[in-house]
Every structure is written in C-alpha cells, then in structure tokens.
Amino acid sequence: MKDPIQEEIIEEFSVFDEWLDKYDYLIELSDSLPPIVAEHRTEEYAIKGCQSRVWVDAKEEDGKVFFAADSDAIITKGIIALLIRVMNGRKPQEIVDMDLYFIDAIGLGENLSPTRSNGLVAMIKQMKMYALALTSKA
Image (tube, rainbow, N blue to C red):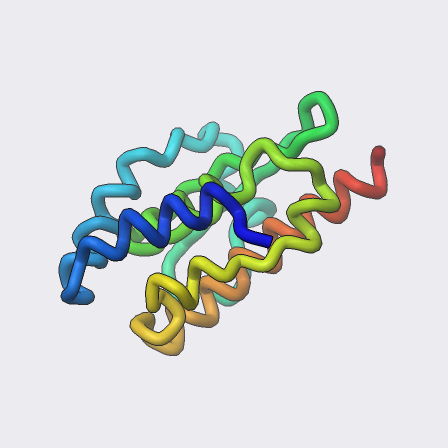
C-alpha cells in the first residue's frame, strides 16, 4: 500500500538529478527538525551505532507516537527529519509494521557511506523500538 507522506518525499527528491543536490536538500530539511529538549541530549536517548551523535525521544498522545530528535551532523539531522516526517503521528503498531520504501526509492540507502547506512538502520530500529514499547503500554 502506498503511503502519501512517503510518496510526497519521493516526489520532492525526484526533482534532483545529482546526489549532491539531494544532500543539499537533506541539509535544508535538518532545519525543519523541531529541537529536542536539552535533558534528552543524553546517553540514555543516544542512538548506538551512529557515527555522529543522534538523540531520539518518543511520546504517546491520544494513541499516536510523536518523535523528537537531534544530531550534531547536519546530513544525519536531515535523515532523521525525514524519518520523523514519515512516522510521526501514527499508531505504534503502524510504525512497527511500516515499510520505509522511500529510502530506496530516493536512492538514500545506496548513496550513504557504510557508517551512515548503519546509522540509518540504527535510527529506524530505535524508533520502531519506541513504538513497540508504547504498543505494550496501550
């Protein structure tokens, strides 16, 4: 099943032919990330397996999950901004089951360095773990 938000992202990235332009767009997206509260920029919220520092937090409101995140690297921050855009405001189980097909569709997976790819996988895993934890609370 096609996801409207992922389709939107694929559409946005389709205007760029060069990967450098896509990186510039990711950097632009990093500005759209709402700031994470200072007390969540700690080891407890840090994602293991990322080359750069990435902090993610999730909260549940009215049965839906909302994420906040930050990173000290702008490209990573842009990537997490995309993940949040796709996963935010959904039911926990929906996030757990989600196929993030936009990653391959925009060529993100194949154009990241191995360490960044590992970081991407770690970010997705952590966000799905948060959703899973919130599912068990429900």
